Each structure stands twice: as C-alpha cells, then as structure tokens.
Image 1: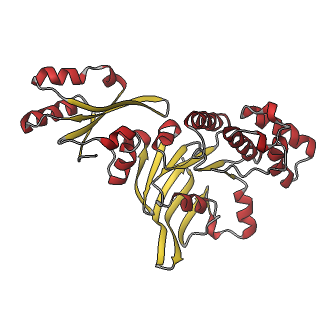
Image 2: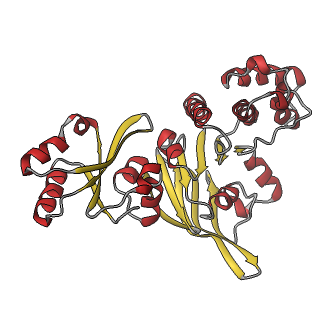
Image 3: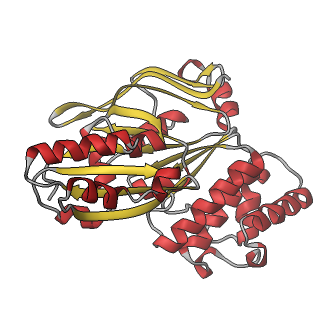
Amino acid sequence: MEPIIKVEHLKKTFQTGAGEVAAVDDISFSIDKGDIYGIIGLSGAGKSTLVRCLNLLERPTSGKVFIGKKNLPDLSEGELRKTRQKIGMIFQHFNLLMQRTVLDNVCFPMEIAGVKKKEARKKALEYLKTVGLEEKAKSYPAQLSGGQKQRVAIARVLAANPEILLCDEATSALDPQTTKSILSLLKEINQKYGITIVVITHEMSVVQEICSHVAVLDHGKLAESGTVEELFHSPKTEAARKLILNAGSQIKQMHGKRLIRITFSGQSSFEPVIGNVVLLYKTPLNILYADTKNLNGKAEGEMILQLPEDTKTADKMIEYFRQEKLGLEELEDVG
C-alpha cells in the first residue's frame, strides 16, 4: 500500500538571538491511508512545527513532504492550495467564528468552495448529527462548552471533505472525560469516512486510546517509531520511556533498588505470574505500581516491581518472567 503521507529527511530551522535552532531535524516516517497516527513528545520536542510542515503552513528548510505522490515543497501556489483542500486541521483552541451560529460555522468552508447555500446547510446538519450537536445548530460558540466547541470544529473540518485530518493538541484544553468522548468521536470518524488522522500530543494516554502507530519526538529528532503496542511493551529510547513512565503520576514518586517494569496482554493477564514466582522462589516481591490501560481497544497491563536484594534470586525471577513471554525492562531508580 502506498502511504498517504511520507516525510523524508525533513528539516526546519529558525534563526534566534542565540543562533540557528533546528525545531525539526532530519525526520523521516510514513503514514498509511486510513491510519490513526500519533506524534508525541514533551514540550519543545518539535511536534507543532512538524505538523505545520505536513500542510506547508511552515515551509521546510529542506527535505520532502509527500501527500500521495505529490511533494508539497515542489508545488506551485495553485497546486498547493488544491492539495491543501484534502487536509483538514483542528486546534487546541477551536478557532471558531464567534459571530456566526454553529450551523454557519460548519457551512463556512462550503461557502468558500462555492457550494450552494441550501445544499451547504443540508450537509452541515448531517455533519452536526455525526458529531452529536444537531440540536445546537442555532446556538453561538459562546453558549457551548469546550467539548461542544471542539465538536463544531470537527464538523466544520468534515464539511471540507478532507482525506487527512491533523489534530494539533486538540484535547489539551479539555477535561479527561470530555477528552475521552472527543477521542471516541475521532475514532468513529476514522472508521465511518476512512479519513487518515494524525494526532499531535504530549499525552501518552491520548496515543494509547486511539492510535495504531506512533512516532516519538525528542528535541527535534525522531527518537523512535512503531506500533503503539511495541512502544508500550518495549520502549527503546530514554525519551519513550520517560513518556510511558510519566503517564502514571504515581510512578514519579517511586524509589528503590532493582526495579523492573513488566507488561502483559491477552492470555498472560489471566495467569497469576506474581503469585507463581513468589511461591517458586519463596521470596516476596514489592509491587510499587500496577495498572491496566486501553491500547486502541485492547486491555494491556503493566507493573513496576522491586525485586529481592539477593542478586541470584532476582536474576531467576527476571528469567521466569521472560519465559512467561512478558514484556520486561529494568529501570533505574525512577523517583
């Protein structure tokens, strides 16, 4: 399958008082059509600059950005405008037209495209129904909650009939329950319309909820990429480990020697592995943290364990967990 988005050796630099800074530094990755792809990193990692390069709101210093077979930096202004029509974008702060009703906000992109008023209003009502806000058609943005405003923003993007939807920290201003409902809506839209969605976020919980693949950015560079399950079970870089461990606030307070993180899914979640290993080696374990997460609709578990101080026993326990096909990594003192 041809990727719908392909980035090759992308670089974007800015001139500052301290000299040249590379916000995006030699990044390459591809996104398949119909995927929900997460781009995650801490503040300053280069996420927002990268997403603005995907539709050329920021022109890259060097490198290629393919949408389908078209390299955006090579296009004329007219060709670029036409290609951008396939790319919708939603933001953290909604960017609605406050003087217009909800219905008129959704009609706006169709007006620009020259769609007749009657047809635009009919389609706008359909998209408002999709996002669950049909009854708010005559309301104004000031009368809506944050979650409702984001739903209007999503309906407005759908009205432009995009193939790609870029979400730049689209849930950062929302409370956890509203975030969950917006992520569920994005997943429904992905399945109903086949729109490829790119989610820019600093929250691992957002990626785990709806994304199938993820790229981790760190100081402008691509630290690692792969499936969300691969990242959760065996992060390869310090940047990825930090994001995963920080996803549970309790983990930040943990101190101890010989800490390990085990992950489990499917059949392994029904096996009493902790009880078995304690009985087998007649030595207690200290469970510092345990949680079950929803990874794109699948239940996945993790534990942080403090092993016994006796090195031989600890090594045997690690070997036992590995034989049981659990994901395992040794941690430094993470407190």
